[in-house]
Image 1 (tube, helix red, strand yellow):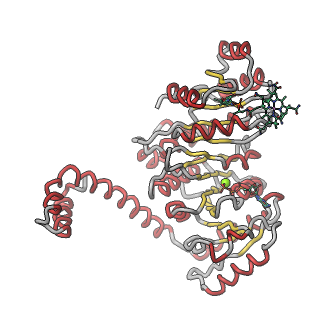
Image 2 (cartoon, each protein chain N blue to C red):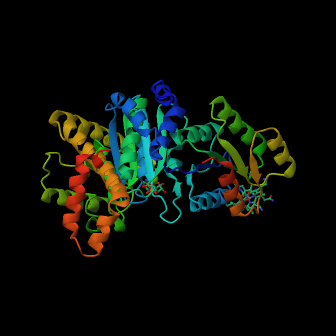
Length: 314
Length: 132
Ligand code: B12
Ligand SMILES: Nc1nc2c(ncn2[C@@H]2O[C@H](COP(=O)(O)OP(=O)(O)OP(=O)(O)O)[C@@H](O)[C@H]2O)c(=O)[nH]1
Ligand SMILES: [Mg+2]
């Protein structure tokens, strides 16, 4: 077994951190490591926390962690912040609000940049979740600003998704981006100390009245004040309720999840191979299409026919 | 393989001067690094634990309180105790020449940068000293 994996399974934090780095960097060891840890995963409850910038996501993660630690459960936190498209660098500041737990051995916090890799972000996050799962974290909290599609895709890997809103004007219901509402299992109106909280709750409830959830779970709308722990015990209780409901109703069975993951991995791999092969072996074909001697559909079929005989299989 | 340099910028002790730390954090981000900023009033224990969990290449301590002679060795010592002394420790702030000499010669810190240091010099030092 890989030395890092062995040490991680014995509880070594440094090895755990190293493994996440290798995954983020898409290092050559990545696949072997993920293969080895897979049998140890699938136990954690993964809670996704998304919402507009500054809504109080990190503060909520911090307060939830305190609540969960009160029950003695080990907590993993993954905090995703945007990578600058200009420099490729990132300023990861979510930890500032989580320092209370910095030296608690029952809490492992990791910050990740989005690194601008389309789709790859959700993949790296999913794999980092697996690492913390194998490390023994019983609850994993994943914070991300729900601005891009790939950031929302992360939520496919959560068992329970919280959408965090605030009573402030910018968050008004009509202005909330489509896509973010659909993924909520629980709505959290944070900063309930501010004006407009009641109206916000009413608006969301009205919206929920108009859409019958296919699953049978109507997302509860909770209010919190992260700054003084108000509403946090209720929030944790509701997360547990959702977990129990999922179990009873077998929503999105493991099989469906696995199917989606396989499709993702295969698509990823195929895209990579197609691009490689087009560059390497099909320059001639590309030229013929460019010269209008061949139409693109016929050219594509030609590539597919040849490739499935072995070329694409590698 | 897409490796990125990861740096923890931390303010140990009771020192509230965070301008320098923020300026450095932004400069390193703009140079393509991933910077984890943990805010004010960190204990050495918190800093070392964050450095390990975040798997950083560099810990950068910003100290303008005069407490550098105790805080910097403490962080380095804790890193050693945790088997993480391959992480480079650097720092900056109002630190007198004599203390810089003592801290470097004692092996407590790789490099220190005093007020007025151009940001490019700091970026270049990190790029030159972290093995990518
Ligand atoms: C601005 C300032 C303040 C502001 C701070 C605002 C803020 N949020 O940061 C305010 C007014 C709040 C303040 C308060 C105080 N201050 Co004051 N302050 C300064 C001043 C004038 C400039 C500091 C600054 O921001 N510089 C700009 C930044 C960009 O530079 P820098 O931090 O030095 O960073 C550079 C390098 O040092 C280095 N660097 C710094 N950190 C890091 C980290 C890494 C990893 C790296 C690689 C490099 C690096 O790179 C940077 C770029 O070159 C200095 C005097 C001075 N000339 O330094 C006094 C100074 C630091 N303050 C001082 C004092 C005494 C105080 C107070 C105690 C005053 C009082 N009696 O109330 C309080 C304490 C505040 C507190 N809670 O800690 C003394 C400290 C003396 C000492 N070291 O023993 C100084 C030196 C003034 C003096 N000559 O007496 N202060
Ligand atoms: N009034 C009020 N302010 C709050 C509350 N919760 C958090 N805040 C403040 O809101 C600001 C942002 O909080 P964060 O927890 O960093 O929010 P975030 O959503 O993680 O922010 P990003 O990660 O930057 O998107 C901070 O200044 C918090 O102190 C609350 O319940 N009430
Ligand atoms: Mg945050």
